[in-house]
Structures are given as structure tokens and as C-alpha cells.
Amino acid sequence: AQSVTQPDIHITVSEGASLELRCNYSYGATPYLFWYVQSPGQGLQLLLKYFSGDTLVQGIKGFEAEFKRSQSSFNLRKPSVHWSDAAEYFCAVKVGGAGSYQLTFGKGTKLSVIP
Amino acid sequence: EPEVTQTPSHQVTQMGQEVILRCVPISNHLYFYWYRQILGQKVEFLVSFYNNEISEKSEIFDDQFSVERPDGSNFTLKIRSTKLEDSAMYFCASSSVTDTQYFGPGTRLTVL
Image (cartoon, one colour):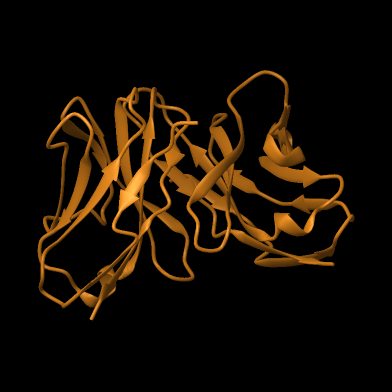
């Protein structure tokens, strides 16, 4: 079965510093990959997605992610973190073609930002 | 921007009671989903729904759960006889095709 690993449970960065959140997936083929963000008390907001093509994808709020097939990774990056980025970040994959709809999520990485 | 809405935001119920969680998906979407997130754990897929029938379900989605699209706008999750372990945040999502799912804000279910 497919799985998603987010190795970092909690990361703390200073405002203005760069950020990289790690995500590794386990699946034979190239899955559809997503990053979602969950602010406290809020739902899941889509940051970005990768289906095919250019392996570097841009998302909302200045985030980007890079798909690396050789490493089965889809790490999320931001060059300069803002205090409002403090939230929990979830990597997710959708595998399978027609007839398969479910997203499999990682356990999430909680981001704290020091002013 | 269209969004998925869910009601209520918080539901408290007694063990053994039935609850219905409601969702209004994005209006032109055709695929609907329920996920749950037990406190401190990962978001888990429950069920997907298309063309008025379940298209996929997880092991979690047992006989105590059911879904329905009673009219053209609402999508509901019913838990027939709630258990303590059903306490979780329940998220509804929708998509126009089977790729990008947009999530609602969630309903926090507390079973006492």
C-alpha cells in the first residue's frame, strides 16, 4: 500500500529564514502529489500540487515544491517565512487511475515561527 | 472563490446516538469525499461518492457509517450509533474530476 512519510513532526524557524519541509512517498509509479496547510481551527487549504511535467511547482503564499523521482520525495520550500505561515503542513498522495480517489496523508509537520 | 462548507462546526453527542454531519460541496463538483482526523493523528480517508453511489471506501467506513446526497447541494455523513472512538474532526471534500480535492473547515465531533 502507498504511504507518505513526513519525518519532521515539529520545526521551528525564525521569521525571514528559509524553510524546507520533507515528504517521502512509497509507491511504484508517479503519484499525484499535494501539499495542504491547516491553520489552527481551520480546514485543509491546498498549497500546491504535482501531476506531471515540470518537477518544480509553484503554489500559493510563496511556497514551492520539487518532485524528485529518484528520491521519492516532494519537499516543500519557502525562501522567507512569515509569522502567518505558522500552521501544520500535510503532504498527500493520490495513487491509481480511474476508480481510485482517496488521498493518503502524512502525519503532518507543525511549523512554529519565531518573530 | 467557491468553497466547501460544513455544519455544524462542533457536534457533541452521547455514545450510542446517531449523528448527521452536513456538507455543501462546491457547486459544479461531481466527486465528494469524507475524511476524518482523530486528535494528534493523520487525516484518514473514509469514503468517496460519485453519481449517487459510493465509489470507494476505506476499512474505517463500516456498517455504522452511511453517506447520502439528499438533494442537489448537500452531502451528508451519518454515524448510526456513535462510539467514543468516533470522536474526531470530520472533513468533507469535493472535486470536479478525480484530482484536486478541496476541503471544508471540518466538523469536530465529540462523543461522550
